[in-house]
Length: 362
Image (cartoon, one colour):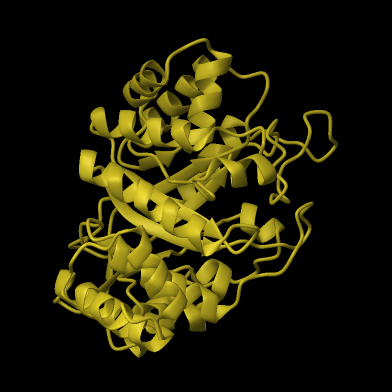
């Protein structure tokens, strides 16, 4: 055992901030159950009401055409592919209507980096959605998309975000982060935005008073040190802006991808999740990933620092194309939370509990 480990464990339990070396020691030398116990204690301090939240929403992938061609992605298509698509307004409208009828409050809009459409196209899309569905929350366009819109439209990131916000964009998901270390990004997604650009989009969003989430996709070619570097970068930005609502770590899905490799198991996921809760001392919410790990590990994650079970995901196409096949109804999510000893509550995008829940079996 590392001689510094007992002291670091005490620091973590007491809520003291850990640096890079201390976080590395904790992950490399710390017992998974001890880390889980500490992470759970931190969760209980932040959320003493014993509530675990969930949201009813839909992931709408408006196109699968993408210039990035990331090696870990099984979803993208070339623009000339027979399988390429771009949702029509009628298709988009029908998906949103179904979401609202199911008690949904949010749509998560993400697509590929389409080579032809400039910002005006997306402004019109947002305006149509808000005109037809003024109460739906649009959580859309990850940082790589924002950077692409800016480049193809010859605009700054700040101007791009400002225009999208005026058109109806409410908040931004943390997709496209993968690992915020450029030597890793250059190997798995060389055509995607850099880590600095990802952080710039988030900083600009927060300056415009648009909340965002942060994510980490791990379990591919990155090292433990790279994971810790990632966590510290988003922690630093959260210190600066306070604009992140939650952190969502999830595991790489290797099926049907150029990158290939193995899928990280429950042990690695839970240990990384616990480390995230401990290191990210300025994040109130940590989300479990039942979509990639399955409902049982998703349930165990609630004892390893997670206070949110995520989305019912009426629709999800990206990780599904890479092999993730788990699906849960709203009632199954509620039962999952109850069986773990927590009180399930439906929330909105900003982690506010909805007073009049309308959860339905979907």
